[in-house]
Image (cartoon, rainbow, N blue to C red; front, side):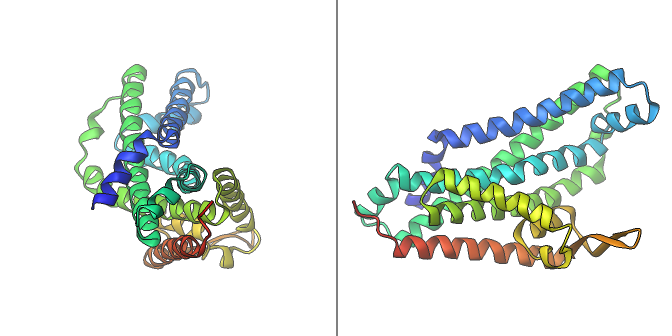
Length: 271
């Protein structure tokens, strides 16, 4: 617990923590601003109605969370990579080992702190997004009666829990990549590259890609029902069912942490 507390105190002082959190909030607020603007100036009734969905509760809860996850999934990768890479470049890992800390224990507890702040970032961005949507609704003149919808509020913990698991896995993947590379920039670059490469590959080999980390975590978030999406006889996507997606996502998380721990155990840290 002492080491975990030390990591929890350390991460708020890392620039990556605040930059990632503020970037997530800023991008979501900017998107919401354009949605509000679009609902005010839209001449197409259907377009205006679609824009107002982001400002109409309880639908806005789901849309805000989806928007946060869409941006946060990639930012979780970069955050995990930034923290893991800084352990090497700033020499904090070497200092911890010199004090007698176990390498694997230090690696895993540092990740636990990263996952905790990742979830706090998700929760904070969601709450800010809800407030911005509510303010936007007042500006546009949309009633806020739906904010107290019981079914929507009771369903939020499950949705946030699934989102937290998905983002924890994304952060673990970035964490492992940066640990192997011993570099923040390499970890972030490779993590982003894999994210987009998997998205593109999903159009060509969906039945294979659905087992890959980002696709599996996406199915966790959406509560995927499994099966394939076929348009005009062509398969455009495939997803895992909800239970399988959770198990696959946990497996990727465990593998990522195992790789990070094993690499740290075998690495030459002296110098």
